[in-house]
Image 1: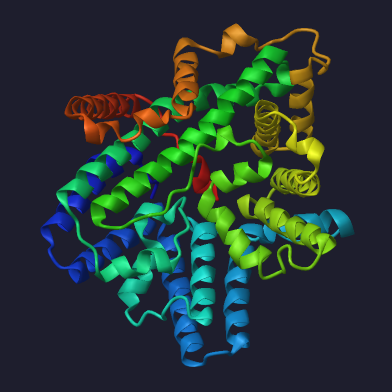
Image 2: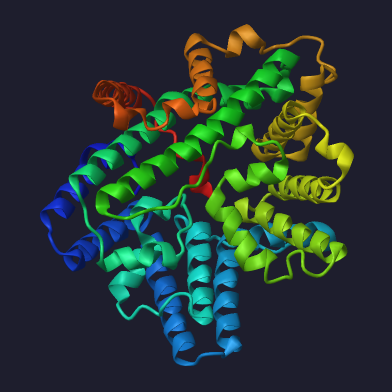
Length: 465
């Protein structure tokens, strides 16, 4: 069954919120939300639902065994190995077999497997939970309903944020849904909805055309603006989903962690990754980098640990060479930064120069991330430099960039600017400003609905991970 955003927004979601509001006890609300989450997975595919049931049962049992036998590291190791093995089989097996075929000249048959919805996010959630149970940070939940709801809560299942039990566990059975939370959550949801539909999807249509015609000949201006479009498309797509998830969470009484903090205003690559997909970066730090020794065992060991983290980060995003290259690219940049950030000459570099260098590095990173092959990466970079060798630009600036795309790009840049501190909290101090904000959000929602109904549905970029 194909997931359809129109059905979700206009039928599924209002029904979920209405029933949740009518139920007064958190236990009954949890049962309802679990039913909804299971339906959400079956909407993606029935196989995803079966996978979730088996996978969840394995991790629920593992956590209970780990808690009943404190200090038995082999139980934790077994649970983590099983989780990683499952992720490998469903997401990376065919990719790995293809590499073996190329290296050894073998011919392993392609294994026909479906990819469960949100498998990467669910796997990381499960691993974090069993590790935290082993460390005594989280309890082994006795209620299967609570555990499966924690693992599969529909608002964060597809794209995160990755939620640790310590953040959401206490709210499973002790949360209050107030009118103020409902209004604030609705505002956040509508803002994210507008980001996705009005900005990300509009930019995405142009981005798709630019990258589809790389080999046909694109001018340097087209190449530069195309990757700038993608730079903002992926930000508004992913941060828009996060806003929607956080907003829905607040309506339902959950406090989901923030996942973005104005990342494009970072002044180093390391800072960028502390402000982009924050929960994923923290997961890699807490469950891979620190256990490997972090920066506690000398520079060479730190370089190795950072290399492992970034190689894993690239692989986590997908079974493709360009994702691995993307991980290596950022790993090299972060390792380089660690070697020079304490130097006096580096400290004297103006912040504006550091920001410009970081933003440029980020743009090149998105080329690697978006292109499907090494060949396309190289041709795109050559097109940006005007050295691709095209005698005629078949798809030039005027052909690909229409008015809606340029307006969406201008809005994307404007909304990404740092908000002055004087404007923070203005809605709390001014009833007039608060009213204007709500009227603007109503308009955003109405226009977004019109755009969504009249256009082909574009799934969220990070749904594939």
